[in-house]
Length: 361
Image (cartoon, rainbow, N blue to C red; front, side, top):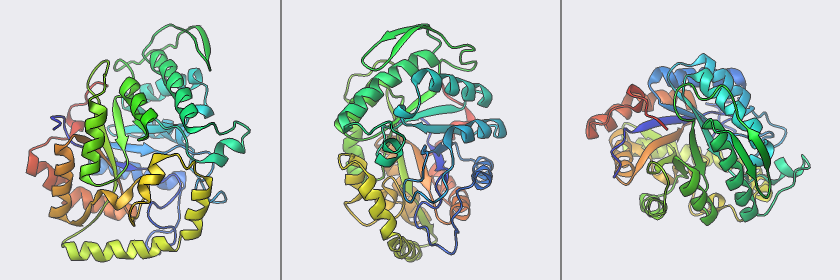
């Protein structure tokens, strides 16, 4: 069981709706303007974090809009005052020296509210069409391990000389250093064996895709038992929320989204064809019907306000500290969650918001 403050975050809508793209209650919109409004609203409602997924082209359908993550993160860092900004990165797209410099800049713009979310890519065309190439699953993780080792040391202010299989960095230091803490936080996604090794070695927080409580508990036990240098690893969970006054009302809303999501079947077939079959996230998401990305409603946050609050507390009790949430229609349901569920969770466990006292890494 974790003793850390519980935190709630929201996924930025970098490629539009998270559940269904043909929803009359949420027209497709992945614009900067919408994402700026959404994150500012989330901050005003008391959310602690936002996660900006990183793609250069839309992973579902390449003619749809796609927000650029790192320029958006820099802008949000300047516009916000409290919310943590976590931005994903695929190592093959940026040299580690360049990315480390960008991360330090955003960290200092934000006043120490920035996090790097390391992901090792699943969307093949994004790299193949750029001429970068799409390496085998385990090779991508080997590359990512060396890549994050360089980034981590540079953002920690170290003067680095590194000679490895992929990078040759000589007497390199970045200034200014982090002005607010030792370095930005490092979040790691992925659930394969190489991913678990990587997060145990280099991560501060492991993002787990939405899935049932027993599965999440087993994943946490596995990774928590691995040797770890530095502070203990923390854990986050992705989940899609459908909450109403009663369980039956929530199920009606859930079924509506499932029916709308079924209309996106051609889009999902494109995504499936473009995905590395070795990616564990995609294997996990095929286990049961769901809405939302990264596991979505598989985490079971569907029900009455009391039901959803109780399930969140159960996940917290097995070690989940940060809940990175999705909704649809996003803005209205995000407000509903803030008003109805967050107070129930915190009163039920007497858990204070992490935003009241920002921790170190």
